Each structure stands twice: as structure tokens, then as C-alpha cells.
Length: 171
Image (cartoon, rainbow, N blue to C red):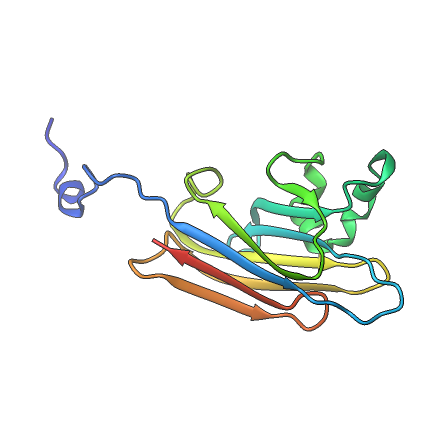
């Protein structure tokens, strides 16, 4: 079998599929308020037109009776409108309990969906947090998929509900 010249020249015929490393670091700040509640957090992937590609994580109060915590997910307004309302919670591998103040790291397996079949191009990783008796905040981290030959980072700084958020991509 003879391969088209452009495939052979690009090395696509024999190149193994390479999985990149994607790590998200996010900080939930300790707030000095009378009534503190851990924030609900949604993390998802968007195209440049802000169409949701996939939900990567949703942290909410999974311990409430009768799935009472799910009713507050709509306070994560942007995520809810773009992807959340079509999901049935809990979602295995995506949903989990709220997190305490501090630094948290998510290592995302890019050899599995949604990254395994993700078309090359520009994307945004979005982090949204909402807190009962508190505020709402959203940070956007643009990146290019697949990552170039060198490691790339994107970062943003929250002002209330989120602290420092960074995304690291390694080929």
C-alpha cells in the first residue's frame, strides 16, 4: 500500500498517538465571613464560540439528603446554561464533593475522552465557582490543542471565590 505524499512527509503514517499531560491547579481562598460555605465549582472545556465541549469536573454538596445539593448547581450559571442542565448527576469520574479552602490539583487524562478525540484548535478551560451566601466568579484559560512541542501554561487570578488558577500543558 502506498501512502499519499503529504501523509508520509508529515510522518503521520507511523507516528504513535501521543498523550499530552494536562494539569489544572486551582486555589479556593479562605474567606473571613460570618457564614462560610464551600463553593460549588464547575470546570469545563469550550470552543472559541463558547460552545461547551465537555464537563471535566463538578464539585458540589453530594452529601445532602435526597440529592438536595443538586438543586443549587444552577447557581453555576454559565456552566448550567452551556452543559449542566443536560447532565444527570452524579456523573462518574466528573462529579464529586466540594473542596475545602486551599490548593487543589487536577491531573486530566488526555488519552481518554474528551481529549482523545478532540480536534486540533483553540479552546478555553473555564472554572466557575458559586457559594451560598456568597458570590460567583468565573475564570477563563485559553489554550491550543494539541500542545506544541514545548510545555505551555495559562493562568488567571480570581478576586473573591477563586484564587490563583493555572493550566499546564506538556506534549
